[in-house]
Amino acid sequence: MRRLLIILALVAGALAVPAPASAHSALVSASPGPGDKVAPGARVIGLTFAPLRGAGPHRVSVAGPGDKPVAVGRPLLVNGATLCLSVAELRQPGTYAVSYSTVAADGDPQQSRYYFQVLPSGQPPAAPAACAGRALPALSTTGGAVQARSNPVLAALPWIGLVALIGMATATVVATVRNRTARR
Image 1: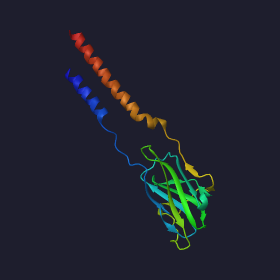
Image 2: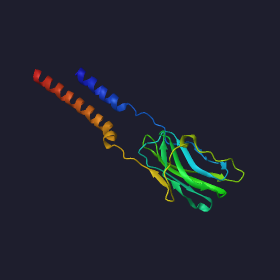
Image 3: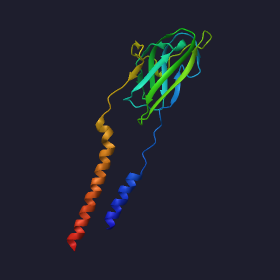
Image 4: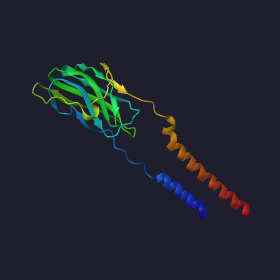
């Protein structure tokens, strides 16, 4: 009976342990970033988040003055946290909107939008450091997405472990009951 109680306590403890908290894919920084005033000529946009899921999908689109779509390349995920994408040269002065949809490393999706301005008196645009020297995908007007296949076996491992743990506990309980019955 004592062994049974120990096993049940271990199973209950394993089920009660909370999963580790993961940071969600909040925007940490961007170039050009929210509220920035940049001079005409930007050709690369970089968005840095808390860690992102490599499998994505991650989407970024840009709209210029008058809500006209700006051609962008498919985002390239760099260092697990920065999305780099090429954009058609931002020449026309006005307000630009960057819309994004990402998936955090823990699988939670996030979408948002921010604005920046292109002004003749703005700061010269600088390519984000994480994006420097990278060959970025070609431009498209449909907005980009990067998505890799996720491995279903890896996604199922926690459930397989839980089923195995419950199976072992059940087998131990059955064996203990059989042994007690056989002794009588």
